[in-house]
Length: 314
Image (cartoon, rainbow, N blue to C red; front, side, top):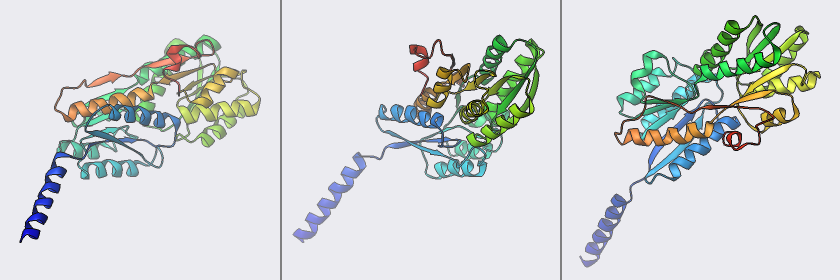
């Protein structure tokens, strides 16, 4: 009898101890694909935010590619089934993710969007949207190109995933500014689906087919890298003015050697960091802003070593 009482008492103490040490609440960070420096920098920001918040942890997942919509939907649905505390999501498509976002909303799990927007029909189902003002960023890239090539001639747009929220704003803003402020003829856009090799081949073909091309715009990290490599391989680096987007080490190298004139750099770190912090606040019932602009910096050879540029380069 004494042995039985001792066992019961020990079991009670274990249960009591377990109750007082609850598992950390999970913030699921789900991006378009984990296979780029940009998204890895989002992860760094998310991890740093979670490390500074007692009782929370951040997990990080990405689909197989930007076009793997079913894979990204499955990641969101799995997070809902795990009953996470919040979801930070970079949707690869403005429409395809809405049913999954709605499931999170129905489960009372706050969703914070980063980088790319959802369609208007999904606005009721997410709490906040943190991103670069992509239209404004596209306009800045167009202005930088016009400043170098003038207002007449031919340029090409090397884009990434047709129809994604960031692409619509970014390339749309670029095209509208070009059409409004110049008589430049636009070739493209060409869609790499965020595959560097595809962008390299597409840019090589565009350069070969347009000997009079004056400028190029590479609209995201892998596309801009492929564009830069095509310029180098074709012997046209520094001869055709090229504006890129994002700021990993490859693109920084292209700025320093003159292959690219400028890169528009988003704060990927801030998207991850503020995304997790905002998700935690929303999970606690706090009011969060519906939109937060995480900013963009135009980086050139002249300012690449300044603190302003270094704060966003990765």
